[in-house]
Image 1 (cartoon, one colour):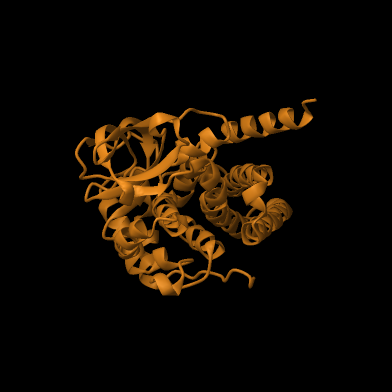
Image 2 (spheres, rainbow, N blue to C red; image 1 turned 90 degrees about the vertical axis):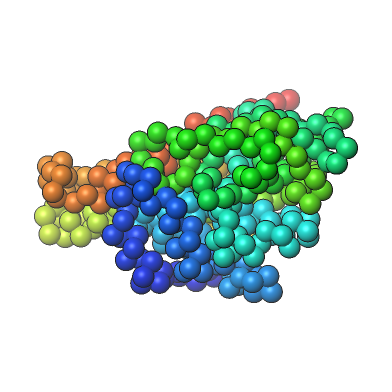
Length: 364
C-alpha cells in the first residue's frame, strides 16, 4: 500500500477553526456549525472509496485529516471522529441497504453520525456489559436501554450506532437508530469542562423500533475486532494533532526564550513521529485486527506524548501562560489534553484490558 498522504485543510476551514476554537471549546454556540463546515470541506469523504462517493484513500488518510483538525480544535476533531467512525461502520457493514440509505447523507453532512460503540468496545475487552437490549417484535426488534455519553448527537438530527443483546440468546448485534424514531430521548448537552461544542449528550431508548435495514451486523463479536483498528486509529488522530500543535508551540517558544528545553521538545517530536508511523503501518497491514494489545499500547503512548507536550508548552511559556491576555490557545490545549486520557476507552480501561490479556496468556 502507498503511504498515507499529508492532509492540508482548505484555507476557509482552517481559518474558521483557528478563529473559533476557543468558542467551540467553552460554549455550545457553534455546535450546529461543525458538521456542515467539515462536510463542505469534503473531509468526511477522505478514506471513502471514490466509487461510493468519497475521495479515495483509506483509513490512514482519515486519521491524518482528523489530526489536522485537532491541531486547531479538539472539539471539531472529536465531532469529526464520531461522524467519520460511523461512516466507517456503514462502509464495513455487510448490509447494502443500510449503506444505500445513509452513506450519501453522511458524506454531505445532512445528518450527524454518532459512533455509540464505546460501550461495545469495552464489552469486547471484557470491561463492561452491553447497555441496550433488543427484544423481538412482529416487525423487527425493539430496543431498550441507554448510553451515558455519545458525541455528535446533533440536535438537527442524528443516526447512532449501538451494540445490543439479541433476542433468544443470539450473538450481540450492532444496529443504527435515528434521533426521530419513537422512543429515542436525547438528554441536554453534558456539562463538560471543555469540548462543549461537540453535541455530547446521553441517550435513552424505550421500545425503539428497528428492522433489518437498520442492522449494521448480526455478529458483533466477529465484526467489532475488524472495525476496531479504524475506531481507535481515528481516535488516535485527535492525540496526534493536539500533540503536534503543543510541540510546535513549544518549539517556537524554546527557540526564543528557553533554549534549554529545545532538545526535549525535538526528542518528543521524534517519539511522536515514530508512534504515528507504527500506527499507520499497523492499520495498513491489518495486524491490529488480530492483535489488539499493540494498538492499545500505541493509544496509551500517544496520550502520554500529549501530556508531555502540553507540559513542555507550559514550561516554554513560563509564568506568561497564566496570563489571560497571553495565549488563549495554550489554555484551551491544556484543557483538551485533560480529555485525552479519559475518552472511551480510557487509559485506565485499556490498561485493565492489557492486564487481563497478560494474565490470560500466562494462565496454565
